[in-house]
Amino acid sequence: RSRYTGLIDRYRDRLPIRDDDRVISLGEGNTPLIRLQNVPRAIGKDVDIYVKYEGLNPTGSFKDRGMTMAVTQAVNAGSKAIICASTGNTSAAAAAYAARAGITAFVVIPEGKIAQGKLAQAMMHGSVVIQIQGNFDDGMRLVKEVAESAPVTIVNSVNPYRLQGQKTAAFEIIEELGRAPDYHSLPVGNAGNITAHWIGYCEYTSGSGDHVTEACAFCQGHCKFAGGAVTGNRPVMVGYQAAGSAPFMRGEMVDQPETVATAIRIGHPQSWVHAWKVKEESGGWFDECSDEAILAAQKLLAEKEGVFCEPASATSLAGVLQDLESGRIAEGSSIVCTLTGHGLKDPDTAIAQSSRAPIVVKAERGAVEQAILANL
Ligand code: F0G
Image 1 (cartoon, protein in one colour):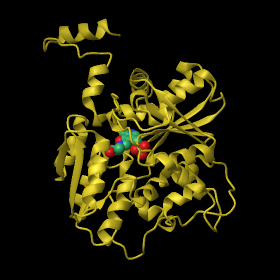
Image 2 (tube, protein in one colour):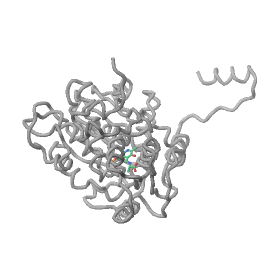
Image 3 (cartoon, helix red, strand yellow):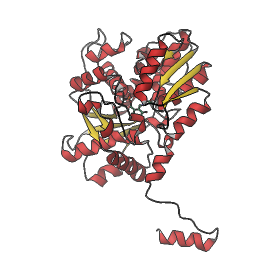
Image 4 (spheres, helix red, strand yellow):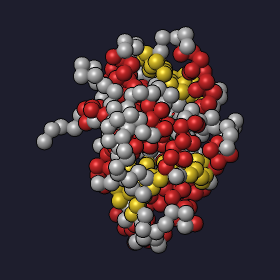
């Protein structure tokens, strides 16, 4: 049995990579697909809900899948520096992969609006952190502007190599389940990840030949596996947004996005056009969840299943719970919810909403015993 050495080695034949390229990897991918046991019982529904726990990637989010490809490509093209705008996870991944590659990462983040863990990662990996007095969308605009003249490679999902790496999550799901699920639910910010998953599902379920799906226009010619007749099933793709940051529900850009789920506090999605095509091609939809519903889903997963994800990630489950309740998703369905980032990324939000405050007692046997008996 060979050692797992990351998704580029694993899916080399389906990725735009040359044999002699130096691969920048931290062993990303191959994340657990966990079947929920207690949540379906708790909501009284007969459904197969799986969570794809992307928080177990090396830097704690799905961004590592895209970053291994983007940084590998940048390094092999001779780039000495990368840059991204970020709500936190992209900056953590960019910082780590740049450290691994021995190049510089510049990360542009909204001041005061990224979770503690993510800021710690960007700082610890030695990236240059540029905090702007603006939001993610401002940062994205600035990054695109400066990259026109400065010698830096953009590693946001507008870099096509990012989506190429991220599509491998769909491959893993099909291989593990033996088929695609009926529904695949994701939290949507820039909509890069929902696009990447659709590319992955389309590629994996098609034969060889020309690009078969419009989604493949997104790959800018990088797909190696796209085209031909679709042979397998593909899921209905469902994207959920935080209500205060839901341009796909409003049908237009949102200038002042707000949500407790800071990772998806985005009003001007970069993959706007792509995501509408994904919705159309897959027969899916977008919907929105309140901050309360998002936090409730995060807590439900943590308390009932032992799975800790960050608030933005729980949006995928929060939306599915709403749609199971309304009947839009039928009982008997199989559903995969992507949990995009680890709960440890945002300890402040977690502690603020946890139901049990620590019990403070004297360091004495009797006091500890009493605390146990009172809480059995
Ligand atoms: N979930 C988490 C935890 C994220 O960090 C992001 C995006 C998303 C969902 C949305 O994914 O943008 O592909 O639709 N985070 C980016 C960042 C914006 O900078 O870390 P998307």
